[in-house]
Structure formats: structure tokens, C-alpha cells
Image: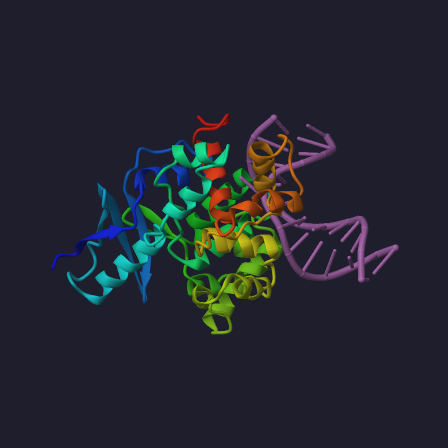
Length: 299
DNA sequence: TACCAGGTAAAAA
DNA sequence: TTTTTACATGGT
């Protein structure tokens, strides 16, 4: 056994396309990167896993973890976590079958074949991302998050990992505000981090909940409203039927591609996406990715 | 300079 | 109960 493994993932899958789509949401020039580099927390250790695609049909990834013990339990977990991060088990074919007859979605899905949503390595990371993106523009949120990572993150082989809940829990509101978070958001994140450390909150439990339960659990946390809960569900948990319809970007985009071009209300966006159940979240994700990579705003 | 931007909870009415 | 308001940063 080596500390690198070949893993078959559900085809169709295009890692490079998925990476480009993920990168297109950040206000920085897209890289040429074809590898996924993923900082993972295994127990108290922070280590880097890498994945690159080595086959299309069947779709295969080579997953490596230099710091893992060859054949060890840590290697096994690194592979599992990496698979989860690339939505390896997601079967896109039923989604493609469903969109095949749709005047807009057929073209969108056809141009993005093999695109899967990439998930952050930890749900806590996703919670931080979601809270930073509340209300302010994505660009402003990105700047805040960059400072957050500079101040509180840890670098592993050139990739900056988010702080663990334990690492963040020892900070103060003032320290968090230094990266541009509002006092409110700083308190939300500290409250979450401390809740996790003290065992009152367990984000990993969300994996075992259905959509309704997860929505309820997340919205019971202070600072986590419906938008944040659904945003975390679709991006962090890979829930393919969940759409944060309150989201300004989604309302604009659904209006643009499935409506008359103007921004919809949340209710209109929900109605417009209803025909795509149980793939409403994936449909919205494909529209977003299409718009960023190939649409009028594409570079 | 304003105003808006992938919201939310708390205050005020 | 429902409706305002404060909050942070960054682009236009």
C-alpha cells in the first residue's frame, strides 16, 4: 500500500471543470489548477490531501496524502473526506435526463457535463463562509474572509486551512472584528465555535438529518437564518434539492435564465425552480456556474 | 457622496 | 404582532 489511491467516482465527472466553477465565484483571476488540494483535519492533525483526475470513463481520481501512513486509517479517512468534497457519489445522470427536454437547462447542463459542486473540507468552514457572505457583496465578503484566514488560518503546504472551532473559540470579538466582521457576525461565529467545543453543537450530525431537520437545526443557531441554513445545506452538505431562494444572486439569475430577465422575488424563484425537484439546488448551481463560466459576465 | 450588496436579530411601533 | 433599524466592507 502507498499513501495514494485510485478511486472510482460516479461518472460523468470533470474535476477540472468543477474546480474552475468553484474558482469562478472568487474575485481573483482563475488559475490553471487541475488538482484539488484539500486541507483536512483528522483528529488534531492538519494535513493536505490532493486529488487529480486520471480517467473519464470510468471516472477515476488519484487521491494522495503524503503525510498519511500508507494503508493506514488516516489514509482511508483522507480518501473518504476527499470523495465527499468532490461529491464523488453524486450521480448526475438523472439530473441530465430531467433537464434534457428543457429549452434552457438542456443547453446549460450540456455545456457543463461532469460538473459537480465542490464542498469545503469542514462544515465549520462552510458556516464561516456563509456568515461572512451575509448581506455584504461577495467581493467584500471575500476580502473579509481573506483577512480572516490570514489572521486565524493555518498553512499546510501552501494551502490555508480555516481555523478549527477550538482554535477560534479562544479568540475575542475584538480580534474577529479586526478582519472586518461586524460585531454581530463575530459573536455568531464565536458562539458557534464555543458551542462545538463545549459539545452543545455538532455540525457533523447534519449529515444524518433530512433537509427539513437540517434546516431546523441550523436556523436554531443564533445568526443563522433561513438563507444561511439553505446556503450551508446546498454548498456544505451537497443537498441537491435545496435552494436558498432568498439569495439575491439566485433571484437575479433565475429571472435572467428562466424568467423575463428581471430579478424575481424569492417566491417567484421558488416557483420557477419547482419543476426541477428533486434537483432544484443543482439546477440553480448549474445556472450560477454557467453564468460565471460561459455567460455574459464570463471572462 | 450616496447607495447597494447572495441577511439577521433586536428594537420600536 | 409587524415593521424598522444597525451593522461592516467594497464597488459603482
